[in-house]
Length: 327
Image 1 (cartoon, rainbow, N blue to C red):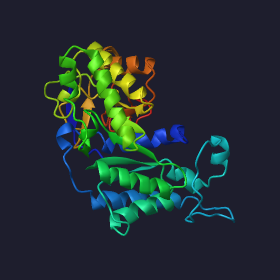
Image 2 (cartoon, rainbow, N blue to C red):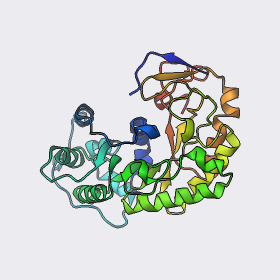
Image 3 (cartoon, rainbow, N blue to C red):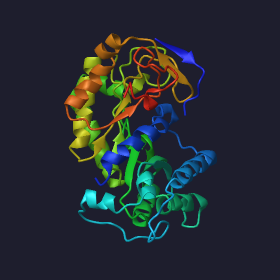
C-alpha cells in the first residue's frame, strides 16, 4: 500500500534520446480525465528554455569554426550515426537529450509560442517534441513546419492510451483499457494498438506513450484505475502484449508505463510523491510481471513512474524516474 510523502512531483539518435524520454515523460502521463484541452503553461515553457540555456553554457570551448545558432543544411536520407555524432558540438549533443512540450493547434509564424519552439530547435538543437492537446490539422501543419526548421529530424511523441483521441480532436477514441479487457478478447487490444499507430503515423508521430501495464490492485487509486487492463497481472500481460504487437506492426515505437508499477497507490503522482512500502518479492510477483512479459516480447521502451520504493532503494525521497537502483 502507498503512504503520502509531502514532496511535489514535478532513428537517428534513439539510443541517446531515450534518456530524455525518461526525464520528460513524467509530465506526459496524464490521467484520462486530464485529456481535455488546456492552455500551455507560460511558466513551464520559460523553465524549459532556461534549463536548455544553462546546459548550453557548459560548452565553454566551441570550435573556432563553430556554427552554433546558424542554420545548417537539413539532414535527409540515410546517414552514418557515428560520423554524425563526431561532427556535432557538445551543445548540439546536449540539446538532443531534451524533448519539449508542444500543443497541436495552428500557430502563425510570428506567434510567441511558435517562435519559442523555433528557438528551442535552432538555438538549442532539441531532440524532439511531446505533443499534448491539439487538432489533426494543427498538429500536422506544426509538425511539418518544425521538421523543416530542424537540421536533424525531430523525434515526435504523444500519449495515446485509448487512441489518438486521448490528445487529438477528430481521431478515433477507444474505450479505456479496462473496457477492452472486459471483452476477454486480447485480439481487440491488437487492433486498438494498430489503428492508434496508423493515425499516429498520419500525424507524424514516431513514438506513443502506451500501453499502461500497471496492475490495477488498489481500489483507492485515483490516477490509474480504468487505464489499466486488469487487477490480474497475467491479463495485463496478455492484452498489453497484443497492443504492443499492434503498434509495432505499423513500425512505431510503443512505450509501456509506468515502470515498475503504479497500480498500488492511493495518491496521484502528478500532485505528490507516492511511497510503495511493498518488498521486492511482492513487486516481482505482481507489478513487474507485465513489464517482464512485454520486454521478453520485444518491448523497446518504458516510461518510469514518479514513485518511491524504499524497500529497494537507499533513498526514499527519490522517485523511480531519478533512482538508478530502481531503473
